[in-house]
Length: 610
Image (cartoon, rainbow, N blue to C red):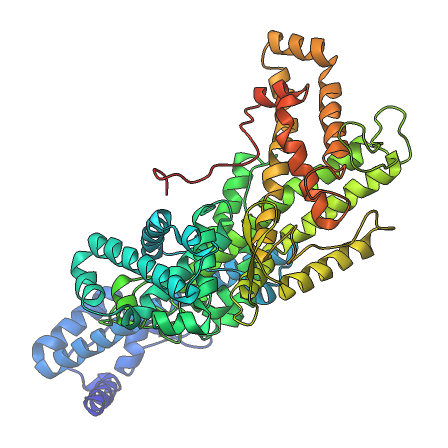
């Protein structure tokens, strides 16, 4: 075909170079040459340069009418020219889109460098759990139901004669049986044959995955599973024993899925974490003092950054290829395998970005109350001046178990809040260390009456090591440590790592309601003349009320009171809990109620609200 086109073009060119003197039709067109003189065209090529569009059209029509071969040549040339124009248009469009994408990427990257504090996502990725998919959330609800009706710790953590490992294995199998029944009733067609006709050991991939989902969800949402997680982790703690594994037939513990575990399996995973656009796409947006337009602009930037990350790193499935199923798909879990490609998909990119966003939001939620209380302490109290609002405490007065002067108590409170803020910033690594200590088969526990019933007494070397590093960092930032530096772990005060991590998840639960009350009091004060008159009558002024709350909390929330209180690291938190338990007896309790305060303990799960 190409050779034929070449021959056609040569013939047409030869026709254009025909001498017009021999042509049958004469032409009156003249052409201008150098010097302005007029000269008649000699060839068709010269005539084409000076002919009008109408003359050209008439000439081509006559040539096409006289010779079908010329008509075909003209048609082929027109088709070629049309195809060429379409190709040029396509290339220009692609080039313009590339320029726009590049400009948008450069703009977003510059904003990431200018406006976003650099986050080392690559280092943090191994501690950031993956957000649950919809299928995994379905399995989570089923697991919660099974744990709710189970009485594992009530059956196992008791003094009794007989083979304890056999009892543990029997209780684990009962939990698996309950899970089997709930899953089959939820999805009969998929689960009936694999779960009913097979032994538990043959479905070990499924049970291990379900237990991992529960552990991951608890790390992501410490306020949830407050009744069920203890049963789950104690059951898994027993399941790692060799004699229990042998009796049950499989290991129940699997690795918790994190961002690092996902990106390490994928090409370009590390590059995604290093991309400055990831910082823009994961940045938390909250109103504060921003206008609606500013918030909308930030939302738009996040959406554009996520779309750009999907375009750069997400690989779309090939045409006709089966769509990759989400993690937690029941059929895949029962088959014991998950079809995974080595390339990142758009869903993978979105999951990674969402998981990192959850991590940043979790950190802010936990650390912000600490930061706010530190700001209140520094702005409302002067360590060198106690004439108006003193923080001095004396042993035996107001329930205090410590004696501190104003400056010493100021420093003691500040150090405690700084320590809590640092712990909140390392909550995910501490959770990982907690589970590693609890599920370490080499770390055996023993049942011990700690004064609060039977508890599992077990050492926690990983958590202890991390806490010492955190404590050393805080001590290096402040001058002169007030109180003891002892971190109780594996003793009667803090029997195991689970009690430790549960204790520190209470920090935002204690501080956030206080901060909320202090923030809402000005609007409540201005809400009605009656409310304003009440506060002025009882407390003289709004500022006096706020200072009274802060003074009492900074004094008696850190006075060493409580069952295992004192000046040690864990005793400080015990003192705060003791202060919270007496909030109803405080003179200013009515002010808390006016701001919508309901309590410090949050909501425990009930049978109606798994």
